[in-house]
Image (cartoon, rainbow, N blue to C red; front, side, top):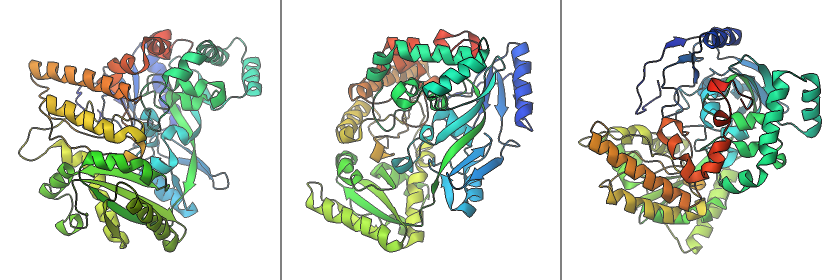
Length: 484
C-alpha cells in the first residue's frame, strides 16, 4: 500500500469514498466493528504507514476538490485526495501554489502530505507541510468532527464553554494539560532543526507556538485522526528561476559548504554525489549532454534562486558566486542560463529515488534508513561519520544525496532483507545510525515519516519520557482516548 515500501500487508478492506461525508460514514461502520482505519495519501511515504490489517480510505479518486480559494490571504480549502500537481495547476490562474513540493508531486496528495509532514526541495524556502496548514477539519475514531487550528486563551475558553461536558472540550482540555504539565520536557527534547519530521508535533501545543492543534496533528500518519479537509496557506509562484551547480571534491565537502550557500537565501539547495550521477547515466535518467553540464567534482550542490525578473534571479546567483569564490570552499561552477536545460538537470535530482532503488547489476536497495536529518551546519561531519558507518557494514558505495540546505540526507542501502541474518544485520545498522543522528541533535526522519521503519527507534532520539507522552500511548485503541 505504500510506494516502494518494505512492507506488504493485505488490508481488511479498501473504501473509496465519493464524498467527505461518505468517508465519515465509513469510519462509523469501522468503529461499530472495532476495525482500524488508515487514510492513504499516495506517493508520499516509504515507511509502511498505510500497511496494516485494517480498512484503508483511499481519497484520491473522488475527494480531490479545491473547495475554495481566497487569493487575498492567500489560502485554499482542499479535500485530502487532491493531487499536488493537479491542485497547483488549478491555482496557477491565481499565480499561487502550495509551498512544499515532494519529488512525487505528480502523484502525492494533500492528505498524504499532511499525513507525513511532507517537504521536498522547496521546503528550503517554504518549510514543511506543517508550516502551510492553517486549519484542518478532522474526525476522531469515536465520531467527533471539528475544525482545529491555533488556539489562543480566548478561543480555548470559548471551546470549553460551548462544548462543556462534550468530547471536543475533553480533547482540548487533555491536550492543554499534556502541554502544561510537560513544558520543560517538550521544549528541551525536540531538536530545533528545519527537518525534524520524526515523532508527534507535541511542540506545536506549547503556548509560544499558539497551542496549534492543526500543526500538532500534521505528520501523525493517520494514527490520531482522519483529515477531512485542510485550509492551507499558499505562496506566489516564482516568476523566474536560475540554477547554479557547484562541484566539490566529495559529498562531505559539499556538505561543509552548505551554511555559506544557505546564507544567500536560495529557493532550494540540493546535494548529490557521483554514485547518483553514475546511476543516472546507466539508467538513462538524463541525456549525456545534460549530465555534461555538471562541473568537475564528485559531490555537487544544486542551488536554485528565484526572482520577479530574470535579472533579479541571476543577480542573486551572481552574489553567491562572488562570495563562495572568496571563501575556503571555492568550488567549480556551472551556471546554466537556459531554463529548459536547468529543468532537465534538476530532474536528475528529482529522479534520485528511482535511480537508486534498482541499480543495474547490483542488489535492489531498500528504504528504512533513507532520510535522516541533522543541523545543516554539521552536515559535512555527519556525512563523513555516516559514510564510515556504511563502509563498516559493507555498503560504502551507497549513494548520498538530498535536501542538503536543511541537513536531510537520502540514501538507499542494499541490505538482504529476505535472509534472517541480513535482517539482523540491518537492525544493528539502523540502531547505530539512529544513535549517530541523535548525537548530532538530528531527526531519524527528515521527510518520509517514521512508520513501521523507525517508530521503534524514537526513544533513541527523544528519550522514553517523550515517547510515553505520545497521545496513542495515553489513550485507548484507535483514537478513542482523550488525547486523540
